[in-house]
Amino acid sequence: MNAFLSFINYIGKESDGKYRYELLFSENPEEFWGDKFEFKPCGLVNKLTPHEEHISDVYIIKTNFKLNLIQESMCFGFQDCTDGCVALAYAYDEKDNLIIKFDFGEPYDEVVKKLAEKNVFLE
Image 1 (cartoon, one colour):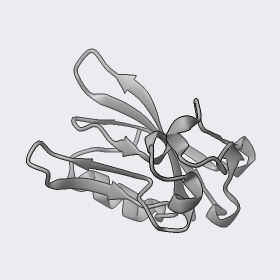
Image 2 (image 1 turned 90 degrees about the vertical axis):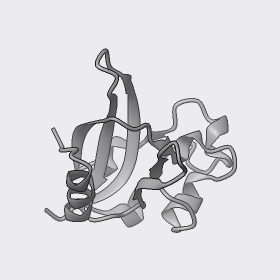
Image 3 (image 1 turned 90 degrees about the horizontal axis):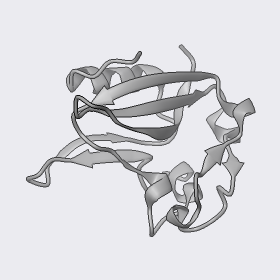
């Protein structure tokens, strides 16, 4: 698959305690953009949303860990993420060990591999 991770939406916490996310992929990450993506920091924007024409595939995941998402950042903007300065999403455990990290534009196969290592699979 020729798609690249471009955005992650937090859907919510389910009754079983798992966190549900929507992973958005784009075939052209260099053109990926959305409403208010130029705002800095992202956390000041209510509901940062990518333009639909840039989204090629959408998958759902359920995790035991909560991801820190770029759109919740009170320090960085989405442009910082697309430039590779900060991660699109990451998670640490209670001992401050990195569990997982996703960068903007990661290839689909790499995302699937990282998730599988944590027993998380795309739906």
